[in-house]
Image (cartoon, rainbow, N blue to C red; front, side, top):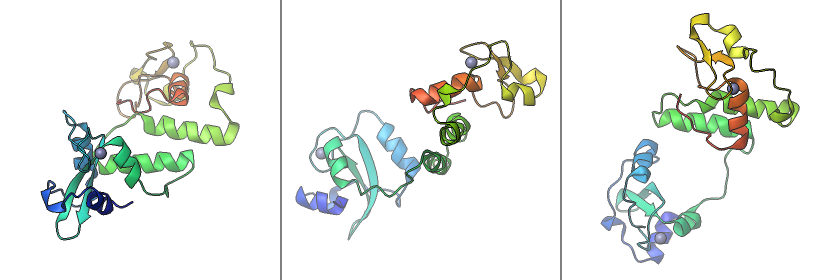
Length: 185
Ligand SMILES: [Zn+2]
Ligand SMILES: [Zn+2]
């Protein structure tokens, strides 16, 4: 269902909605969704969980805030990337567009995607003893090496190019567990 149809079904006139920047307005959308307290759903008044800038006939771009049920109702059939690698590329493009300069998950996320394609679950690869530096520590200036925040393995921790406080092994585990895919470096 289109947002315009949803609004019509709930008898909400587009002109009562707050004017929005031109869609997709990703950065403004992120800010709006993160703002507290949550806004009321434009359709039903329940607590919203997401928002979309939508160009509405006769009203121009307007904010449509949506509760969970309404958000599901207007979700379009999924046409995005279906592979993990494609998803990583898509996330990166979205984050760059949103102005998020440095996110640590890019390289490890993509490494995990590649690892899965190549060898199946990355966890089956043997992990060397924690006294052994990881790849990044072997290829960066020695004064940028520091201990992994989890296992103390020497890793590329400081300076330009350092992307995570974790060594490559702990980083891959964190990504595999999907616990915190978005860690700022
Ligand atoms: Zn609602
Ligand atoms: Zn580690």
